[in-house]
Length: 78
Image (cartoon, rainbow, N blue to C red; front, top):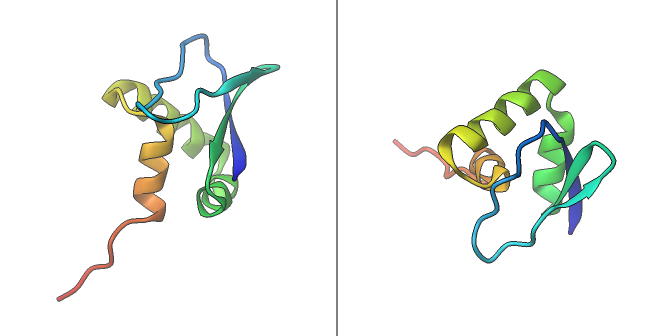
């Protein structure tokens, strides 16, 4: 397991039941995630990271759920 950092904007992060609660480190929240998720997150531009963080709050989902949806999406078959 590795971690990703999300900038604290003054709101509490939403945590999915059964997952570890993120901890605060300076001006960031630190979430524990799988290696593949961290690699995807680190490649994203800062603007896209902010969009995903806002989407998380808007939908009421853990930010890790949203990111994992991009990383582990099922393959398309015809």
